[in-house]
Image (cartoon, rainbow over all chains, first blue to last red; front, side, top):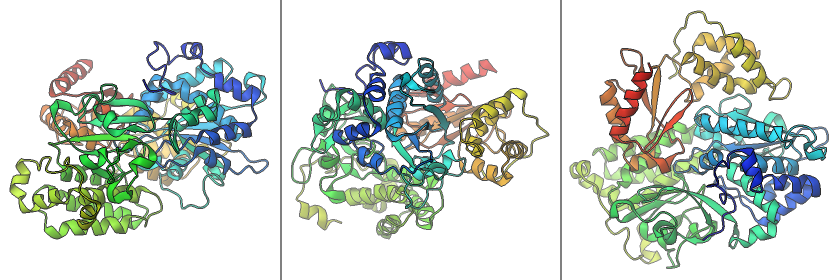
Length: 456
Length: 171
């Protein structure tokens, strides 16, 4: 059995309550940090752990914390990003629903490390039940003296609040989230200045994902070195993977980073294989934004090495033949799924969620959606395929925030790996309305790299 | 969703106002605008939608310009700018849900309720719409119903029928 650093107690009855959570070792990290450590020592421990941001970007958390400006007489803020909206990702919902005190505990320790006296958990508005759960957990923690004035007699004060979003994917981008917390439209800000210098209300701010904050608890309990022993190379620790799509056992799994993708999909401990006895056609491994890979390339890298669930292995081969770990939103497609239809669906999503600030994204996402809609509905032209690639390239890298890239990558990668299927939709437009392209050669043994590159 | 509908004179209850006041205390002095999203949620929970009238009153309470409320209320997709059915069924329509039949569920709801997406049934009880990823892909297909945003998972045509029946009994 793999080590569970976050969800080890998830099945304990009543673990969502303060008393049960405490009986199972909860809030030890707060005691240890506030009574025996300095804030800087907590930051150092997180640096040693090698923890990387779990929201999608994978930036080292300790380094992000060390960038926080600390001018005299200015408030600093920690904001937890619980605006979980990346299609395919639902781990934060799971964590907040079942073990909310882990997040509250992580928030207290992390706020202490950063010197924040007020912290916020920004939860997407649709998660109203989770907002209630967190508010209750915060009240319980406060009642027990873990929040409020002079926590555990340490002299450290902290208030923790839950802030609801309003239904906007873009608010998962940290500067858009900050704008939203200020009561504004979620339009991302131009960086620099980075939030570490000027964030919420122009004060130094750190924004971290739910899972990142939760991981601080085992790091402080067991030490950063212990945490770094789990995992694989620079992918230290465990990761929550949200598994969805055509799997026998979709759900949230805590894995040790470095687990082979094949084992994750097919073993009984995890997803238990593809549903209804079908064959795997493709996988989006890290949330809808990351490049989609055909079955053969998700199971093995282009060099024939087993593909692992880690930051490095999933991105092995770059975008030509690899993808990204992203948020850990693992979406499996069986042989009956239509890649063109799914690409259109994702394109519609990004068009819907574009904040409209930057022209390449605002106009480009709508354009891609329209062209893909035509392709899917039998009105495509062969030149549309290159048009899509062209538009996606003109969005990528040309916008204030990464939503533009996130919209471009799924389209570009679908064409990169499934061009045959797109062409078939054009040459067989009538048939394509009635049946799917099927598995084709997408699960076949890997071609040589030269063959892959020559197709693009 | 940019058009707004008129609503007759409204008055926020003392209870609602006291909730607004508590929310404002969560932010530093002078940063009361941050209370806008939580307040919009409370107003929508109370009236089922957010009228121009309500937005003007919120602006007055927060001491901000009315446009600051309009631009926010119309940006975020959870806020309704016109009256909805008593129950609004919001079905996730994004990729992972569609892999396991969300489109079929939406067609079934459309047929069962007899209204198109965004429309309200003649009795005023139901409306429905497709929404983007609800972060519940492992329980797909899913739908939610405000103002509590109760979640219904692993939907089938039968479970949707049962749900609509149960909701009718609540009316």
